[in-house]
Image 1 (spheres, rainbow, N blue to C red):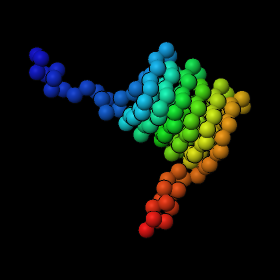
Image 2 (cartoon, helix red, strand yellow; image 1 turned 180 degrees about the vertical axis):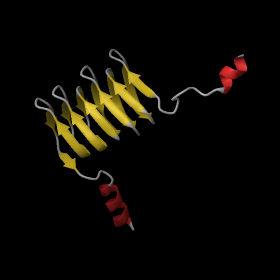
Image 3 (cartoon, rainbow, N blue to C red; image 1 turned 45 degrees about the vertical axis):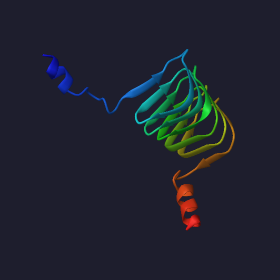
Length: 131
């Protein structure tokens, strides 16, 4: 009976979602291979290979890198979003943004430089300059 439970993998274990709930504070570098939802506070850096959702109650003091992101809270730091960035009406970003595509709702605040297009191109250019 116990052997069967240990032998069977958890469903969707590879596609897990990490949630930092309201009232939770995380300090340091945060890395994830799955989706991330932040409603609490994070300082340091945030990186996910998948999607990031920053809730209205979230307060982020970190550089952020994600494949896709939806933001409705405060981000103080630079954002790099490889594909699609959505800034909802309650979002406030104090930092530079680099993204493939962006959607900005009325009321969203951006204080920084915005760069759009293929996110990976500058890295390739730097590599060719070093050669």
